[in-house]
Length: 189
Image (cartoon, rainbow, N blue to C red; front, side, top):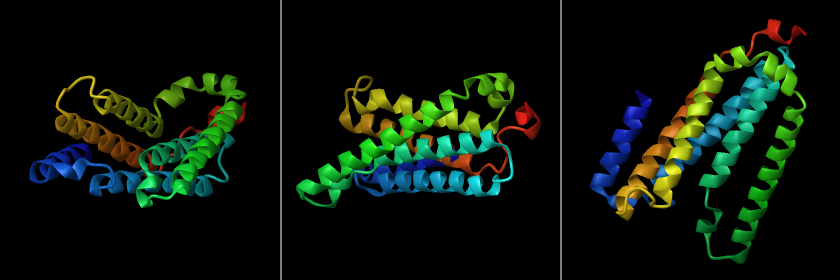
């Protein structure tokens, strides 16, 4: 239902004022806000799961880093002004987030046997399923960002925004789920 409302909101805003989908406008701000909330909620779940299994903590932290990576992708720091330092700051933030994600996923790769042993529980986790579909929505927006599918720039930008807003809503819904990602019995090995 939230995805339908987000789509209607994008189309309605575009119909009234086509510039509403431009960079730095309200929809971009909503996407950044939802991604920030999703990262914060995942991090809050870490404190609630402190006495749970380590793998739940690993997965929640990985999902928080994923949301932060999408947030960094969405935010255009250089829109704050014409200073040469904004572009440099934006590049440094992206590099730091990218390196932290590589280090974290490198650490998680050492736990592949444990993840593989729990593959059926991972597949049936609603948090991971929604996060997966959020990533699919983001990947689906890429051809419209590059105008590979639709020639009209305005229509292509609208479809890209719909995909990206659907992705952020889906990632935020995944973060709001209070469930423990994996039962404790899986990690007793």
